Image (cartoon, rainbow, N blue to C red; front, side):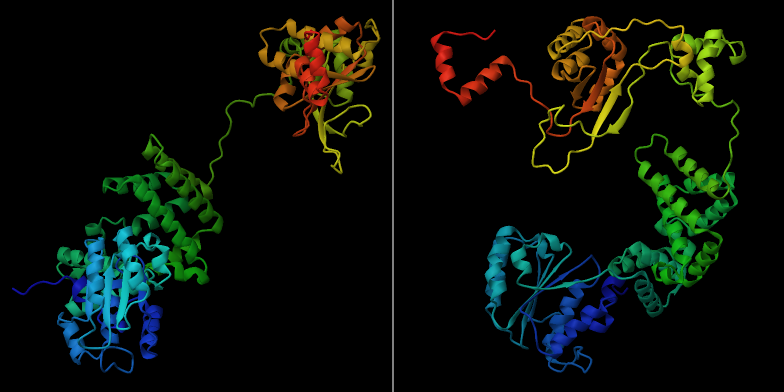
Length: 598
């Protein structure tokens, strides 16, 4: 029985031409060999299985060939090429840095660098998985890598370029290997199948290529696995069974159900998928990819983004013509949202089924007729007016309520707003007003500002009763003059009546009122929260101030401070400290007479 060699080793590239998917890079290396402009150090980096080590061996073999071909390939006939093919060449030394990553291993390598080649012009050192070297080994290797002998060439290969020290990167020519496309992998697998005498469906090879995720070595390994399963006759059905791949036929049927708005059919297809052992998130991820492929199939310019076989691409094109862009955009959004919410969902099956139902309703929305009349929005008013609105129709309202509602109807105002009692204060309303002149309201704004910022003010005034109510209403007018000190005292006195309202008490103690004129005062607050807190107790506060000041003809304005504008209120001790800073003699006077702050 002959020794079996896996396809990844048997069909490993031996010439630049046989390297799959790296045409630009191999051409660069061939041009460097032809022009004899070889660097002393190279770094090959890229994903696994894309040909880094293979290209390093081909490059090392070609630069030592005595009779290279016109296309830049090794002749495979000279002594150097035969020694390399028979694995007895002393000019090419490979080191696995994953198992030889110590300083001693690098020192042994440096000792070999001093020995010139016996056959050929160059001695090539290939260090695979170079990112596994320790920091000390990297540092020991720096000097030799920067100034090696003229006969030494280093080729470093790694899958993790970001782990290489910058001092190593700066000493090498860096070649980035790209992932191999699905089409290139499928073509190479077709070549291997023909060489081995196997039959393979293009759809089956395309699934293997997608499973490899850009790596040729992985693709050849999966190919050998499928060959063992099928016995040499590789079919699409056998591949998806062996690799546990979800058949795209499910998604074609599912999209047809979406377009028809057939919710039961969509749920049954999902049940079939679950019965085959596929997890819901895997199914949702495949649905997103299928919708994406339908989207790129609608425009000829995006067809290269579709990595499927020709027959499958034709099916995608036919189904894409049935789907509108709006449907695809919305369906992709819903599937992506389901994918994001899947891990945190307690009922994962219900989440996927709900997503399928929502996608079915994109083209066929279901209108839900309300069984109950919508709720009527009622503006808050007094308890008496709310009760009257619920128990008595408008035609049977009392004479007083009719008098209140008559002018409101003429002015197109809601009934609940016109049913307020006489002389009641309306809730606070926020509206922008121009900034107060500097002559009346002092602020701490910087004089260097060119324009004062827009301020938000809340005006609080007694609500004016309708003309019909003003005639019979009798209200005593109090207009006793008061000073700012009396206003401040009444302001603080109110805080003594509400000891449990901690937020309001702190707000009123930190935000004091200031008189603008004989009938208006302003209160500067720091945030909208403080505005809402004062508004909540506005009626009680204004009634208390009117009673304490014997005046009901004034109004209050609330003003939100701008950033950095808040006025600091100093205590008597703070005032004394400030005075001492300006005049130290006050300290002597304070100590001499043993004064105390009242």
